[in-house]
Picture 1 (spheres, helix red, strand yellow):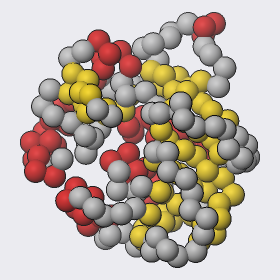
Picture 2 (cartoon, rainbow, N blue to C red; picture 1 turned 180 degrees about the vertical axis):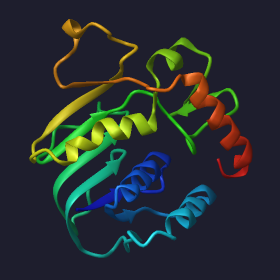
Picture 3 (cartoon, rainbow, N blue to C red; picture 1 turned 135 degrees about the vertical axis):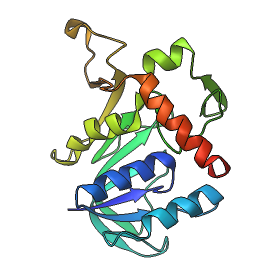
Length: 204
């Protein structure tokens, strides 16, 4: 299997690329390297023989694309199935052969953050807030839960993802929703993230 990751140096895209490479999947990356952070993430990925960065102007035919954000697929790229990862579905319509996944707050290494909280769009959600502690999902748990969608037959759908902390009663689960349990306590996750942040602060 070969997968295109559009915005592969966005921090979420970077985690998708790493996870797929660890599974032995060939990954084609597409992104503009326009920040120091992206340049450094590109150096990390450039050492893997299963990964290559495509020229944005090149034509490509590929079975699956994972798009981080709301960018449209360029006309010169032909894809059988698209999985879109976004925290803003208001401006999106269902598209043919596209599964749109609406994310909760995701957190992990390389996320946009300060020492106080995660930066989400134009606001900072404090790490000690009820919003973060009750709804945030670690990016690796999110990826593991959503990757099975790659194997499903092409269809169009909008799926909303929730933390299992939000709804624990199976009877109240909503249609087209995915509930993810964080298997490691958030405090333990955040300790590792802060250590990573201190080590690479200049690149965050």
